[in-house]
Image 1: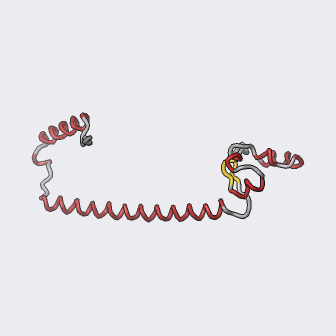
Image 2: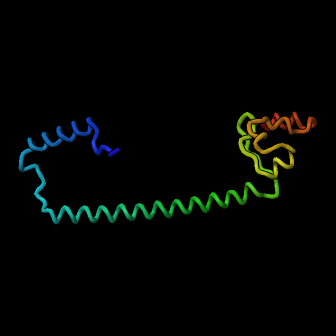
Image 3: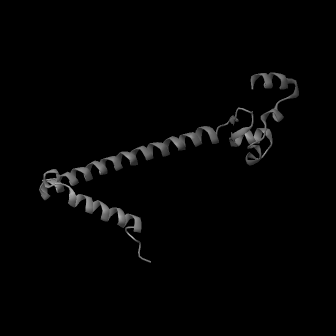
Length: 128
């Protein structure tokens, strides 16, 4: 199935724009030569290529940062958890799941208070 380049609305807008352009006084229309327009387009293309290269570089930096995060958080020899303001587990690394004796998926959404020793429950609630 051939892809439509312009929708019906797009064609309507294009026709209206062309009609409006024909009503623009000749003095207000661009007087640039084709060579000048091509030159401007080439400069714009180079700018876009430079922006694209910058985006690729930033993407690679983000991937490297993510990989460092995985190494530091996920495979750390200590247990790491992130909790929301209610004290429920948002994220848990593999070590924390092992230490708590719960599958990592099973930790998510659980209140951490259930893992706090009863003798420390008051301190935990005050801290939270």
